[in-house]
Length: 228
Image (cartoon, rainbow, N blue to C red; front, side, top):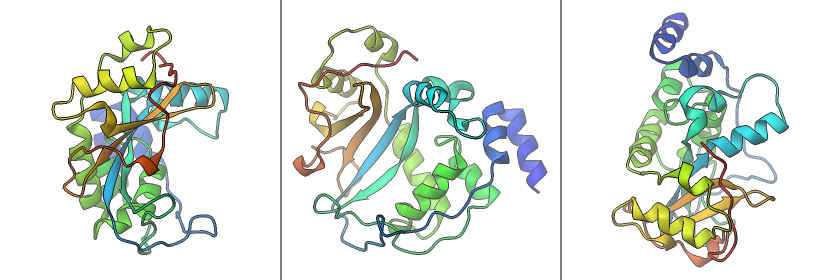
């Protein structure tokens, strides 16, 4: 069965074939990341700006090729995950129920938007276990939300010097009807380069203004964007 999945993935796109070959290991709660069963007050949809992620991977290589940095996925946003939020900092639900290792079929359900099987395993264990009864339902939900988000002209934004976080958020919101700049947060690395866009969602899974306690880069901060 496994060889058949790999063959089908290879025919569709080479990046999927690499992702399917990878094996996952368990992602478990720890002293720093404990089980936390608390009420959900909203959600965060986290999008990785892959060009910066892959540039960092080249500077700090790990064992094996990073599946997020192969093919088309290396040039745009990939899905980090859908996270339930709580009432304040360090009060979000996580690791709500023990989960097993993802099967090949379950990985196949999520690998298009998140082309990294181990990241899928982590997201399902830490976040999805608090939201869904099975991983395919979780991956289907977050993929649907991911597919509804449009990216602005990132090549154009990568050439803007002195761009503020607020200006980037305004450009991002402009191509997403019903979204405003205060409905997202930016995660920047230590050098000020865009790492991720975090979109704040209400319990209805629609964009909402981000709670102040969630922090993130400030609108007046400067942000640099790696070219796609």
